[in-house]
Length: 315
Image: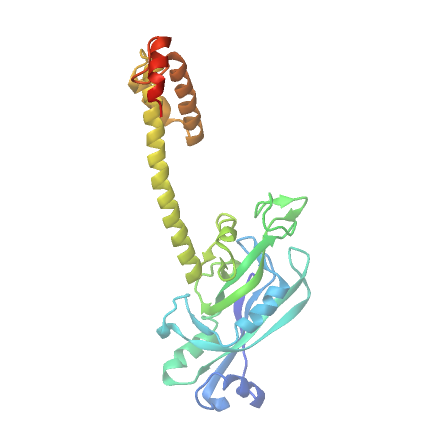
């Protein structure tokens, strides 16, 4: 996953290759009407963000990138469309290994653009090596630690443990968006632009994403987060009302139990308490108030004989 780059012009495409090209055209083009070139999209090497694709992820991306457009600087505008990918394949680089100790595997592609007056400059820039570095934009559904294989662990990306570099492995690609020609690649040697998350992942799972990782949300997830935000806002409103009631009760009971305590001092003390402590304080002060000032009914009898006479009126 370190360098995405144009590696060569593909020459004049043959009949089989033109059949692949014409899968994406509205009419059958002839070989002399198109310009084709080959490029490396990404690989399984650890990149500058201390992340890498698993080989099985590259295999899935191989299918996802078919038919995707090549644009400029990741600006997803129709005017920036330069070429289209019509063929992808995986290749193992003989004699080379990644930092994780795996054989180096690259996802390569071939792309085409029509030969027109408007594309002459683009063809010349590719042939001259000016348009060379590329990066791809895609999304993955989950990542795991490259050292222990767990989704959540204590290994920090970029740190070394026992001589092994901690990194995240990108798994389960959800979609591939585009390939871009870039002047200054975001990753080492042109790298890969990635986003994590998206379809099939619960909101709870997204909240557990490691800090610093980008997450691409689906419309359904955005709606779910909005619904939960409204629910939490409503709970917070009722919680605030409950807290104010607890504070009023504590102040009332404390005034009975500790009449010499300045109210401002007690109010300041309550602000530093959480809800659980505040509720416990309310119960404590209420019990203390009841013990020190027992409450009597308004018409309570003063003497036993009066209580006996009043008993006939009890309900």
